[in-house]
Length: 117
Image 1 (cartoon, rainbow, N blue to C red):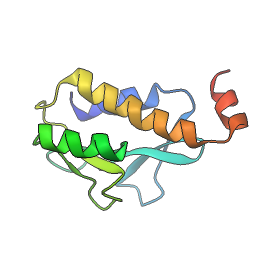
Image 2 (image 1 turned 180 degrees about the vertical axis):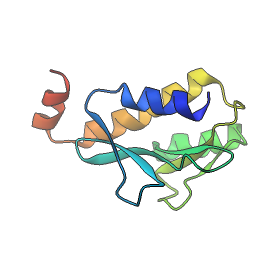
Image 3 (image 1 turned 90 degrees about the horizontal axis):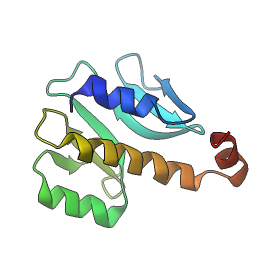
């Protein structure tokens, strides 16, 4: 999966908004005001940081050389994926979904209900 496809998948999630709180060069994807993904489109190779369950984060890093601890992030809860087509597209989509779901599950009940409208 390449970066434009990963971004499109992020934007397809209910309630997702693309923001630039760290400056115009960093795209941050949020749901309910909380970040679930970020990328710097000008970087090569393209990468995307995604939130991840801590135990799963470690397992993914052991299984895939293209998944490392989150760059400039809490390395316990974030992974950085290199989007150079070395990771299966299905896995990248599933990890974006996982990150989004982790953030949604932490939102107040009322905000979660709004996303299901």
